[in-house]
Amino acid sequence: MTHKEIEIQMALGTIQPQDLNAEDFNHWMHLSEQLMARDMKAAEEKRLRSAGQSTEDSKQND
Image (cartoon, rainbow, N blue to C red; front, top):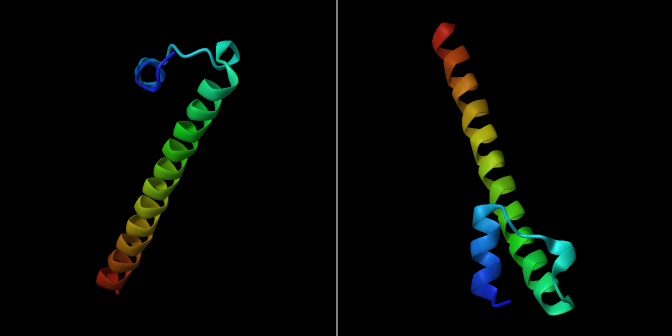
């Protein structure tokens, strides 16, 4: 399977990691780690914006 095919199947949600050979599995893991890091960063940024907004809201209510 090519890396592009792995990426497409990941996007479609149809990838079966247990069916990948070692090289393809490593590529899938690398992509999964990148996606998880991106999602965690976005969640943290959202949390910080929300916390900042809550602080601003409480200042305005004083």
